[in-house]
Length: 291
Ligand SMILES: *[C@@H]1O[C@H](CO)[C@@H](O)[C@H](O)[C@H]1NC(C)=O
Figure 1 (cartoon, rainbow, N blue to C red):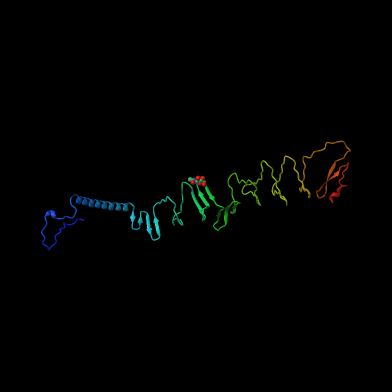
Figure 2: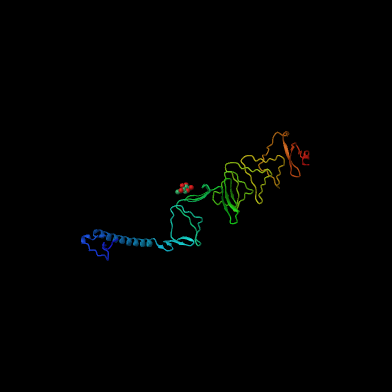
């Protein structure tokens, strides 16, 4: 502090005023004083610049009594109105969309949702990638609104719980192994084909096989023998006409020798039997089989 000149003289006491050289001067004079003024001036300048900078920062950063920029602090919490970027993890308990808009999560890379257990191991994962949507979990299930499982996948099986499973691709469905179903039916297509183009086809039903063509004919074509074999029952051809159009015809041989030849006889119920051939018919003699 700059002090006024202080003299050792005290009022009331008559002491001779000392000479000039005896005046004891306390204070800052000369270049020191100028330096001090300069310093005070510098301080003032710094103060002003500081104040201006503070005001500028407040203005640039949009400081308000309620918040900063697009960030508002109110009683319920924070409200950020602009676009926000979090470069590191963001911890939140819930994420909701606004009432009037949908929620969009997007990335040019994968978007992953992980479920972890208390040890931090991933127990379930949904990954949406540019080329692949991947679900990693023990079971994947889609339920209807009422809670009915519509599509369930686990390690053992895939269950489609919808009323109908439709495969619309032109190649149809491909099953590497068996297909188990109580009914195979043509839907809108006019015909149903059961085909094994390069191998055999077999139908096996221990309790009976019924083939029925209600309003059409039935045809069986085979390159080799057709064998109808019944181990316990009989073979019934139940039709008004029975034709064997290509039956070979005999062209006469040594007459009188009927050894090893038979004639076909028919019982009244249509049953056929063979009877040893003779000069005349022998059906009557052997008709006991008809009883
Ligand atoms: C995205 O996910 C796929 C499939 O899991 C993976 O192969 C790929 O490396 C992932 N990409 C990035 C950038 O993590």
